[in-house]
Length: 456
Image (cartoon, rainbow, N blue to C red):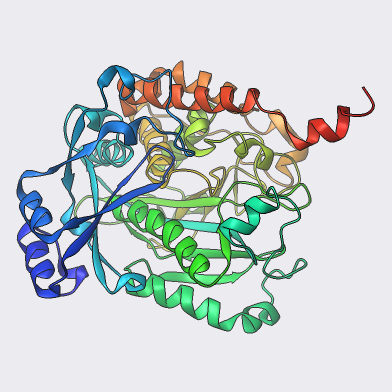
């Protein structure tokens, strides 16, 4: 049996027995998109496939640096860090090529904590799409940077003067992909073997910059693939003496890293495209127009879900290939939403505002949920932006929050977000982003030292 065959607990059990390994990997994806994994005995996993298992609820209360939130209710000292109930998701089974073909299963919260679980939150939005009569197809496209560094060396340098894997801006250059052919081959093979095949992999414009387009998938599988891609590309790089980063922007001199998301709808159970209308301008159906209008209308309120870090807002500046307003255009990469006309199978929207640092489950939940909101409320988009959206500014679309704090407040105050994702999720996620901003506000940056140390 292969991992792609696994759909049920019984099939997962058969694969584990067939592999005859003493331990199996299970992993929970936290609010920041980090895979929190552990190895469990084969016997424990076989039992848990039916009844579930426990995860310490600290995974709901840690930030990305393992500091404990002091402003969240889902986890914290007040809970005694009790166990939370999780379920193993059989269909997420992968074999880990870098770990002796050990099986890995993702888990998601199954009790009260499901209200704040990123994967479960996306699941609820997908259920909403189903109730409206739609299936969802999605694909993530990631820009990331590779460095000739190790976890020890970057810390030894204080994360300054880092050495990119290759110098200079060589976008699409065969020179670079040829010089690093073994690395490219390693990434392609890893992704193929882990069930997250790439449609494309190429050099981006920037030192050590790559872009990978993950093949389209149905619903939550698209986000599963994105989580695993980000995690295991980092693993592969480190095992080769290098490092990969998906932070939104690592350098003042280069554009940031997008986590662009392509989304389309079709009629339930494999029906026709809900986005394509051959007789309409740009082949945009009324459903597609309403979906687009919802994405544009709610983008300022949901931005924190796709720009979730302090660093995210360093990317969202004019002239660096990232949007600054909730704009849309047809085949216009200066806009936050890019309509891509095509055949019934390819007509889609690219949600370009999302960064590579976003949690894939929450990025898809925001992009999909806002679109469904537009359909439910019969919204109609304004005129498309032609030309440079940066120059047009608010004349082309509503302004976006300029900081994480502003984004968190917009989300907390959004009635639409509470209806789409649940009040429990909105309160928890907004609190975690407020914590992140407070942690930054209390720090002293190198910019401040260079600017004020001597002269002030």
